[in-house]
Image (cartoon, rainbow, N blue to C red):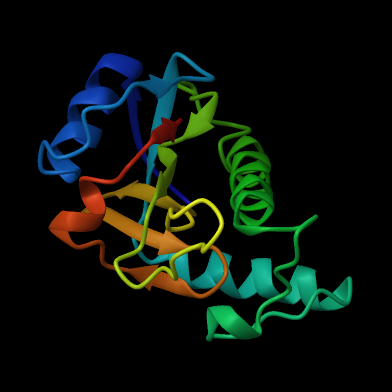
Amino acid sequence: MTTGVVIDRVTLLKAIDIAMEGKAAVPVTFSAEHYALVRHEWISGFMERFREDLSHKNVPVSLVRADSGWRPAFNCTAFTDLFLGNAAAELLVDQWHDRVQAERPAIVAVWYTPDRAPLDRENRHRQAHSVVLIFTDIGPVFVDPQCGPVSLTVSELRTVVHRRA
């Protein structure tokens, strides 16, 4: 999972701002002091294990977000939280024998408004969505825990309302 590179929260904050192209000037809530960069190839295997675990628990998942197990009580934030928790547990096991250890993988939860989000007729707002930003050995990658890697547009980056690492 890990690259063996551990960064501090200041370095991670700078990397987040670069990945967001300076468009998301909102604070980051940090849960640790040190974060591990992950191997890019880990993402696809982790997504497979993540989906398989949900399937064993009868939570429907698919490559199409609309077909996922989303519901009001288990929404995109729940998928993101589960993704982060599972990744953190995998990191702790992966670096068990490492001399230098991180408390968390370099994965950031990001809430933004998709360009194609439907307009809520009652409050006249578009619904936000939660994804993760993973910092890897080949660069940052946005991943929707419900369906896999995604790209955020410049206008979507401007709608980011919160980031949590």
